Image (cartoon, rainbow, N blue to C red; front, side, top):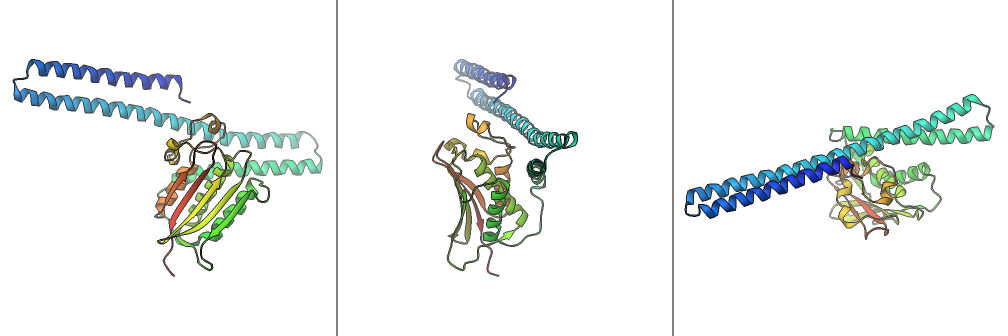
Length: 300
C-alpha cells in the first residue's frame, strides 16, 4: 500500500507538472499568435518550448519513479525485518520454555523440530540477501547435470515444506539417454530453482499441486518449468514480478510474506548464464508457470 504522505507527494508533483505544462503551452501559443511574422523568433520559441516541455515531463517521471523506488525499498526493509524477527522471537520463546519448566521428552523433540525449522527460515532469508549482494561477481563455472540438480532441489523443497507425497511431481521431457548439462555455477542454479519451488509452494494456497518439468527445447536450449494451481498472476504483472523488491499489489498476495528478492535472483542467475526467466499465467486464480531457460553445454 502507498503511504498517505507519499501518495500526496505523487499527486503534488504530477499536478505541478501538468500545471507547468499547461502554462507553458498557453504562453507559447499566445506568443506565437502575437509574433507569427517573426520567423526567427518563432523557431526559437518552438525550440525553447520543446525544451521546457521535455524537462517538465522528465522531471515528473523521475520524481514519480524515485517515490516508487523508495516505497519498494521501505517495503523490502519491513519484509526482511519481519522475516528475521519472527523466527528469532519464536526460537527465544521456545528456549525460555525449556529453561523455565520441565518438558516431556516427546514435547521437547517437537520443540526442537520447530526451532530447527525457524533456523532454516532465518538462514534462507539471510542467504537471499547475501546473494543479492554477491550478484554480478565472477565465480568459477563447471559442467552441471541439470536433471540431478533439479531433482535434488525438488527433494529439498519437499523436506523443507513438509509436503505430502505426490504434492510435487518431477517430470523429464527429453530423449532417452540425453544428458541435460549446462555450464554454470551449481550453487546459483540450485538457488534459482529452489526459489521457483518455494514461490510455487507459497502461492499455491490449499490446492498444492506442483509439477516440475525438465524439458529439452531443441536449438541447444533446456528449460526448467514450475507449474502450480495457485492464485495466478494478472497479465499486467507478468514482467514486473522479476524486478527487485517488487511484489504483486493485491489483497491475496499481500497476506503472503516475502522479501521481493526471489524472482529477481532467478532472473539475474538466468541472465548471467546466458538464458532467461519468464512467467506465464491465464489470470488471477488460474495458476502460473515459471520457466528458467538455459543454453545446453557443448559436447564434452
